[in-house]
Amino acid sequence: MKQESKGRIYREKMTDYKRFAYSLLCISVFTYFGTLIGMHEGREHYAFLPVATLILLIGSSVFFTLSLSYKKKYHQEDDPFTS
Image (cartoon, rainbow, N blue to C red; front, side):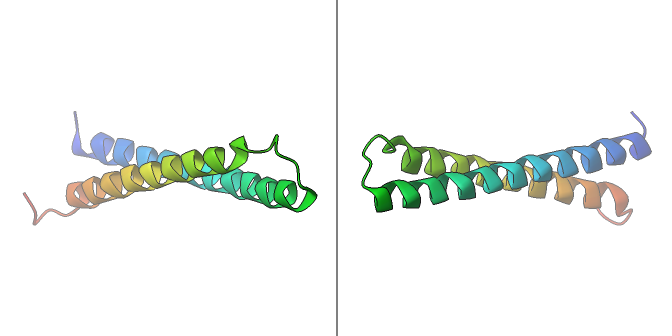
């Protein structure tokens, strides 16, 4: 595999994982607001929302970590003085 194509693949994976992370982060904000609204109205059937919020935040942090690792690989691939 050529270096240019490896760098391109790393960059594409980095942006994809970052997009996934931001999407999960936005969804977790909406579920958190649902939790607040459910607690304010006194409904108990919204008990799954805090768990869903936590799972989405963990998933978001995993994707941010993956994006950061591919960013490091991308910059190492571009830097001719490392290796």
